[in-house]
Length: 209
Image (cartoon, rainbow, N blue to C red; front, top):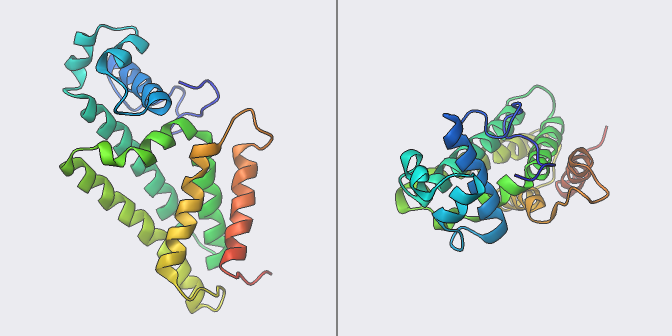
């Protein structure tokens, strides 16, 4: 795992919620391999080797490579949804809540850029049942942002003629950070979050205090 990538839930080690330890190590190795090579180019042997295990050991914890991808995707999408729903339910104006949502969402995608690339860009590699489950989580994330935008329009804070389209634009802008973010670049995750929050507030025509 990228040494500069933050942990998924703020725990002391990456993916600390995954147990037992062998399962956690395999998941960390899978994130690294999928992010570097892509899901389809990665073999279970690649994953096991990165984790310092035999290929047979992987199947004790995960029946298939797709099951590993689903576990990564589910944990990542749950975290993303938690960030957006927490921001949508926070006190303050719609502008305050949108600012908080974008800052937090972008900060997560930058701080966990390797994980986020797998979570956001390997959806089509999931089986039909798992893909449907993850699409449902994405719709809830969309709804959280849309709620903030609708509140802002209703309160006269935002000038947004097309709320669904703007919701898609905001989420796409934030998610794309995972594709290009580089820990050796000149901006930190916090700084990118602040920049994107300002850009999004300008996008929706937020009334400045």
